[in-house]
Image (tube, rainbow, N blue to C red):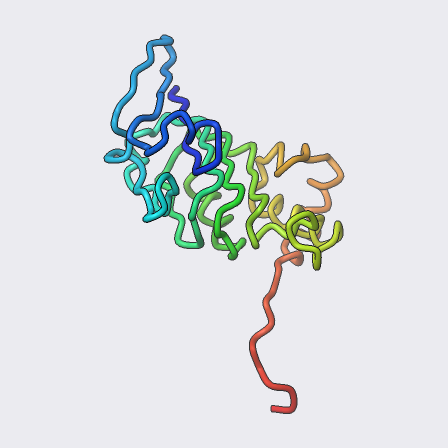
Length: 186
């Protein structure tokens, strides 16, 4: 299987490959090589080193781990089918819509066991948003586990048996609903 990591500005990987022209790819037989991965799997944004698109990742169908922290990836994020992907981190991006992301991930990454969305609006973490509390975060976890039933680890915590059971019973009702902008009295 192929293992590669793509991270944005401010990360260890980004400091090693600066302008995203080269990323190290490691293959099972321990041979390693570098290539211009931008043409294959990523489109850089105007801000050097930050990704907006993952077009072309389908050529890495045996990818197992993908780290996309600190980028500009948003609700239009589309991954190709990656049947072997078990680890995905999308920390500190611009993801605000949770349900559509989870539906997409359930369809294209069936082997996903580890997911982290910290630092996105879609992940109501009290460390990022002072208006959110532990109850908001726990409801988010139940909803994610309801949608992605194979997860073993979500964000910074292992999925417990109790959480999995609660997600089966109540997870569908934990969906975050945004109120419509309406004037009072109409």
